[in-house]
Each structure stands twice: as C-alpha cells, then as structure tokens.
Length: 443
Image 1: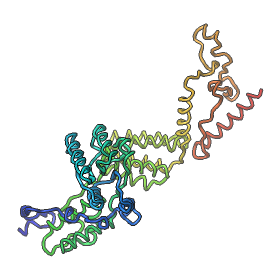
Image 2: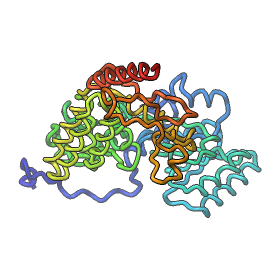
Image 3: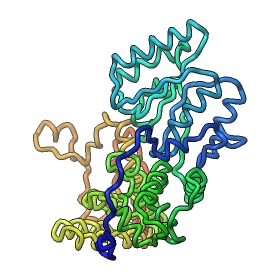
C-alpha cells in the first residue's frame, strides 16, 4: 500500500465503516452553556444582549441573522434551557402548514400546563408570507416564543409584521481567533493534536471561512486521512481537502455586501481596496457582466461630470469583457475599477437628478412657459404659444438668459458642481451664464 502515498498521487486506504452511534465532532463539541459559545461575545458577554435578556428573567421573540456555522441553533437551545422553556425545532425547508399547526397545538397544550415553548425555526426566510403571518397570533398571545434563524437579510426576506414583534440579533462570522479556540477544544476532546504544521493550521482556518461547523468538519477530516506520525504541510492539506469555495450566494447577502464594499471603496478613492473586492467577487463566481453594470453606475453616481471620461472607460470595459470573455476580459474591468477609484469625485449630477425628480413629482401638472412652446397651429399661436421666444444662437454669446421653468415654480437650482475635476470648468460656465442672466434681465 505504501506506493499509493507517493507525492502527487496521494490516496488514502479504505476507511472502516462509520461505527453505530457515531456523532460528528461539531455535535460532540456543541456548547452546553452560553459561556462556552465562541465567537459571539457581543451577544453572550457580560454586557451582551442575550446575557441581559436572561438576567431579566424574560425572553421575547428573536430573529438570529448571520452566516452558517456561527451557533444560531445552539444558542436557541441554550436560551430555552436557561429559561426553563420547552424547545421545539422546525426547518422551513422541510416543514409546511400542517407542521406549523401541529407545533402550535403542542405549544398550546404545554401552555395550558404552565410551560412556554421556544419554537426554533431554521431558515425562516424560506416560509412564504402566509406562513410567516401564521406565527403572529401565537406570538401575540404568548403561546410561543419564536426564535427564527436566517442567513438572509431580515429586512428583505421577513414580513414587517413579524419583524415588529421580534428583536433581530446579528451573529458574526467566526474570527481566526475564535476558530483557533474551537480547534483547541477539539484537540482536548480527541486527546491528540491536529497533525498540521503552523502554516497548514492557518490554512485550514482560512478554508473554514468564518464557519465554526466547517472548521471542525475539516479538522475531523484531517484526523481521518493523516497517517500515523505524519504532519501535513499547507500544500499537502490543500491537496487532500481540496479548496473550499468561498461562501458567496449571488442572490443573497454575500452578493450585496461585496458590491457595497466595492462601491464604497471606489467612492472613497481607494483603488487597492476596490481591486480586492472586485477580485473577491470574480473569484467567487459573480457574473462579470453584473460587475460591469455596477461600474457604469458608479461612473455616473460618484464621478459624474468631474471626469466625463469615466463613463466612456466603463462602457468600453464592459464591451471589452463581452468581446474577450473570462479571464482575459476581467482585466478591462479591473482597469475601469482603478480608473474610477482614482478619478475626481462628484455626486453633483446624482443629487441634482434626485432633486429634479422630487420637483417633477411635486409640480408635475404645471405647463412649461408658453414662450418656449412651439405653435404648430393658428389656434396655438393665437393663444400666445412661442411669443417672445429668443433664439439663443442669435443672441450675444449664444445666450438669451430666458427663464425656462414653469412660471408658477420660478427658477430652481438643482445642479451645483464642485470645484473638482472637469466640473471646475462647468462651474465657471454656470457662474458666467448666471452673471449674463442677471445683466439681461435688468435691461
């Protein structure tokens, strides 16, 4: 069998069948008290929200929001136990209306006997509106204390009525330090160290991507495949475990968080951070065309006329990607990203458009002044359409200084370019025209 373990062709010997009663390492290490929960000290610490709730002797309905493997299910069990309540668990993936009715009826029976039920619903965002609404009566009359867990943003995925009756607690991804704590607990439980050198241990923690359950599963796999007296280095570890894909759901929070980070890095004129988030999105499998569209938006929203070329560059990058595809075309997106981050910034057009839109909605019924309207018929000419209009190209400086807003509105100032980039020149023009407008109005 030794030949099977040569470098570059590593295989493992057949494993024995999983013994009866086997429990995964993550389950055996499940905390039994809040003090044992790692990585959520902002909730379980001395001043944490959950600590305060338990100290008060009351527990209201909660929504646990956070990535996988951060202890949401464990925390719900511990809260029920520390509060002396019954614990019942459902998964929105596998449960329907009949399951909910059964759970509510069991909770009513317990309540009649003086015991409250903590109903834990995993992936609660997968319930539709009607199913979410079914929780409201039993939450309001105290039949259940709902603890819902979700990896999705509750603001988008849960009904407002449900959110108004529950507090949202945010669970954070594990840090490298808290994952290291979990590994040390695993080693103490197994009574043996992980057969990894320092670099490999750090690599395994990175592979877990903030997921506590994942780091323990990976550790268990390492113990399973390592030969006696063997210490794995980082390269061998990656060959054995392969590379764990980044946790990034293109339809969920990972998607929105990273595009937000990219946008704000560009706005903050930090090309290095912008490139980092761009690379993370592309590495995680984001559609480069989506990234290209967002870069075009940034060019208009955050650079605008401070550098009108930014919009041209972004459109060219998008077209280049369509022409070359991946991975060659991704470089054009990176070029556009750096261009935007290093360009002068202005949201003057963006804010002007928002103000103009608000004015349009407020004054949408007003007619433009008659002097700037065409008079294609004799009747309209008789009504004064076009009277007094001055053709700007026939005026000195090709500028008449007329008012173009509806008479009832008066002049408005929406666009206020800053003294940055090309908009410095635009401001000079506007100031000059404003001066001429005042002079010609006084004649």
